[in-house]
Length: 153
Image (cartoon, rainbow, N blue to C red):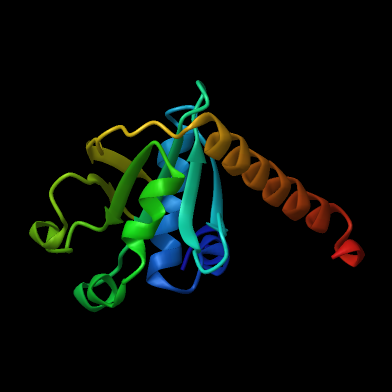
């Protein structure tokens, strides 16, 4: 096996949903969004990907790797109050007809993603946007600081 492929395989996240998340973040970066994975916007909620766009727009993306993974998700509607647009990210094998109408759809794999259907826009209120952006910034900065100085956690 080519050594560069072997090294790359070692850096891929282990779980299928995490691999989708990686591809989603790469695909959204190409659209000038920055992402934080596994962000907690409020107690009891943990989104797979929160993305911040160049105009301050906030998207939440839930990554579903299987029918069972989707059916087990009971919290996704609670995420709608924390974003301007909501998306599901699935791979090419996922039965996309299971996903609710009125939500966005991203087709992804571990390497890239493409927005197939835009989720409807429901703008955050000013106060909620401020809270979301503060959480996003503090989470991202804390993770970066933890990478630069692992003893500060």
